[in-house]
Image (tube, rainbow, N blue to C red):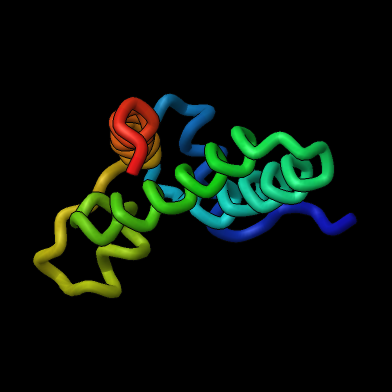
Length: 104
């Protein structure tokens, strides 16, 4: 196994010092949701599949609505507002709760 390096290590060190970071968690979220979708299909638990698919949709919609971490904001432009990792998680959590409460 390769040791962690680069941005994630730097952000973890900042986190250990109590400093806010802006690390994009979307790839990790999708890794988990893809696993949940596979498991849900394997176990024939459509509610698990539905939850994972909803979480993926909510992540995308959150970014499309302008709530994103710094790495994505830089790609949009210099005036794009960005969130810390914790703020982004909170936005996704809030949006997920809304989506789950009122299924499409």
